Image: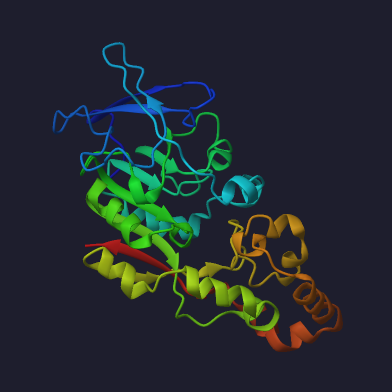
Length: 314
């Protein structure tokens, strides 16, 4: 079911970036099915220490301002080139959007530059990084600078919450998932990676130190499902020509990992580490044909399951 303008109406205040304010849009949301106008706003459970920054509604009848300092995030440092490498892949989006098909309103948590946001319904985005929010398209959905662990929204204010390849960046993952469940009326949809899954050739052969860190950062799938109460879990195979440049996207295009512009879109490669030896081995193996001898069979595959999982609360 898509967005129906007969059921929903919203207006966007296009405030400018000014000192002390880190949110470029705010939204007043009206659900004609329930008659509720205050769907977005201060969380009923948020206290004075909640980590949200200022946003304003620009309705002529109401003006509300909320502010609290946010600490800098890693993406304020490493996220500057993200939008050039990270974009929606329609084959990965398909099961995610199917899980959201009954939702008229969606909150995207850890939204970044806006990949995977459905265009046919009302969406509001939340991300803690100013650098990431600044890369969103000029006419993008309303966005609020906020951390997953303390979302500045009322209980059950949107039909669904989505979170795409972001869970491993949250400092308190259990709390962040609980916040997503609190805000969602019906469903939480999370795309993440299973740390119990086998690695693939890039990490196994060339960068084992990276997968060791990722196995610590990504929460176990069973834990995420339990935090949601109950969840359906399904694999998300990665297409061979995936257009979204996350870490596993180039499993059939090994030479891409030698390009620093490609690696700039992968947070794993932006951590402090000596990448030289691994990059050198990969370059040598591609040149000598060793990679082809070991992994040439992958070139015959159209998609590969390398551990990405979609969780849908039930």
